[in-house]
Length: 96
Image 1: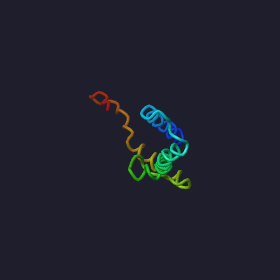
Image 2: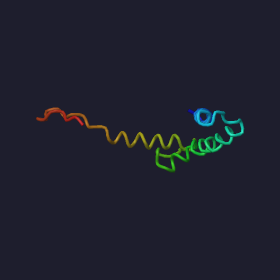
Image 3: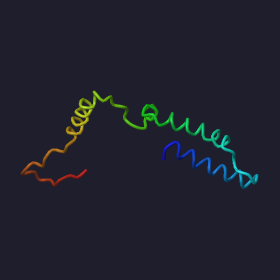
Image 4: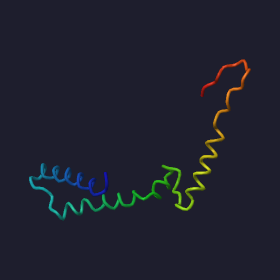
């Protein structure tokens, strides 16, 4: 859900709550005032740098560094591939 959709849903819920309590719905100005901080928060927190700063991901890769980073990741993964089973050994296959 994007910022405008979330703000719309929350303002509808708030307007219904106020209408139930007072008998009149929120005005357009009140709805806009209520939605403004929600939209600002979504705009700020939707930045990829926001998530990376909180270590929710492994960081932002610049487009020109994509090939280098992908190569590094493949090298790391390839070092952890199990070695094939040797012929003639007396033990079974260990699964991890």
